[in-house]
Length: 528
Image (cartoon, rainbow, N blue to C red; front, side, top):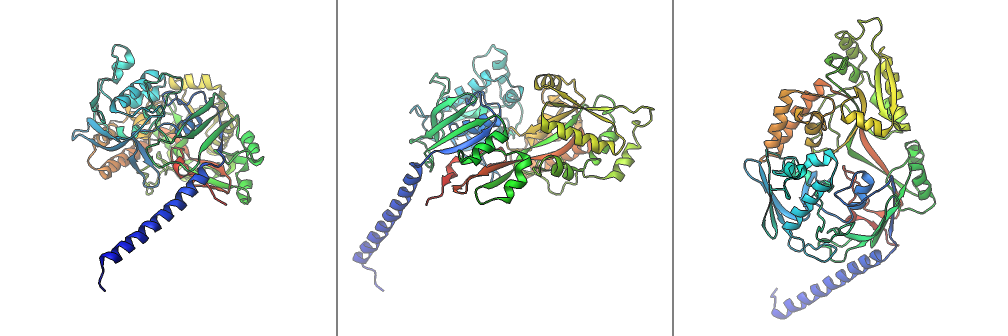
């Protein structure tokens, strides 16, 4: 068959017309959805601020994530980092510096174009504004960060603006985890030159209205640098507790609720005609930490025996409403590098009896009573009581002790508690976020609240931070460190965290990642 110029022209015209028709259908669908009602999202808890420099809980973090963005974002589906405000990045060979190349067409909600200097000023603002030792620790490996905290310096000297769209971060020591830390809200970029209470961001939504402890409304940002969201507005409403939020959902006031009462999970699962339950594994665990330098917790055999005394599946079923997974080890399954082959701790009474025989716990006439301390909360009280019941089957005496949050936090952070509840959520999507802050000896008195010290574990964790060439080798090192720490048992690991959200049937694309966040660009209403 001979293809003539005329036939080529006709074919080209047909293709062009077909493309225009398809494009018209697509834009009409997007327009229809975008102009529809706002997405009503109920959150259990309160928000004092949505400024990323001051974000302190999951409610605030979820709200702020609509308006602000990091240089790189976590992709739960591929378990990897993806470009966001930066389109490329890379470490130096010595792992002591990293360069980020920014996108050139990003605008703040104020209309001003994003530059590398904005990133530097935003990060410095976060560090100066934050009073959280955990947040400050995220900046700790940046050269000059400590000098800014202490006062004499006016900038972080280790952050260098190379040109309008390139920034270099110099580190005091190798830190392969730093690129993951950048996903934390403290590193989300704001327009510092617009001096208002809630500064402009670059996210897919812009601020419409915020009322502390009440809620937030955001509207689509028409000059967003990425794909335009399908939903025109999101309205967050805060509720004091899960029952209040569930009542609002049942009354038709919400399209989604971020968490539900655990006592209601079974009933809600049985009736899926009016809603969907979305259960998401989180990068977090629930445990009881032990001060390994205080008797009787300074006995390795006792700490390991306690871990073998616990029926974690029974605890989850009877106390936690079936929400959560047994924590056999340190890293939750949502964390990249999770080792499915890890044996960890399961209920094993024979092993527990064998280990208890190696301790001096029963050598005294009156064995010491273990004081299990937790902050006042009905859920924590039930866990402490279940812990007492299970440990006492092995004749280990336990006395649950409740403290107000203020007193509990003060005593915990000053290491005045010997056996205490510890919930830990990853500040960044990496195994380092658990192993280094909780168990490296340099963090004792800051985030290492057990006083745990193991020179071999320290060396391996440091080697993992120095490894930037091969993520496979880095994961191997982190797994080795986890096994060493697990064998030393400075904690009684109980549950890997999960969150259960409630969604209307006509909501599509709702999914939370291991950090508890939502990809707002995937969210849409099902069209009639």
